[in-house]
Image (cartoon, rainbow, N blue to C red):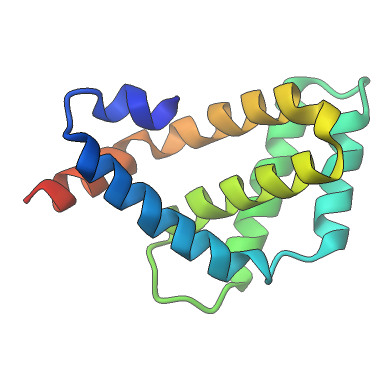
Length: 126
């Protein structure tokens, strides 16, 4: 996983703490993600004529729009990271057969937050 790649030498308790915090944020943001947004993403993932890059661009646009609409005092990167996870869960819950394609796309998308995750881990360790 991206998180495991980034923090391999870090104490597992630190990873659990960060994961629990992100899950808590995810639970709060989950209710703000409307079904039509999820269904639109499902349609994109089901469309085999779209390249992975086209789906990634669409997912990025959706995550950015949702993040901008969220009334939150959190860093934009954290909101986008959690929204990506929430959307991934909702898409796979809607169409379980999309797990491989959605997970792969989400991991690729979250790679852009590599430095942010490293900073999060560093902050917790201090």
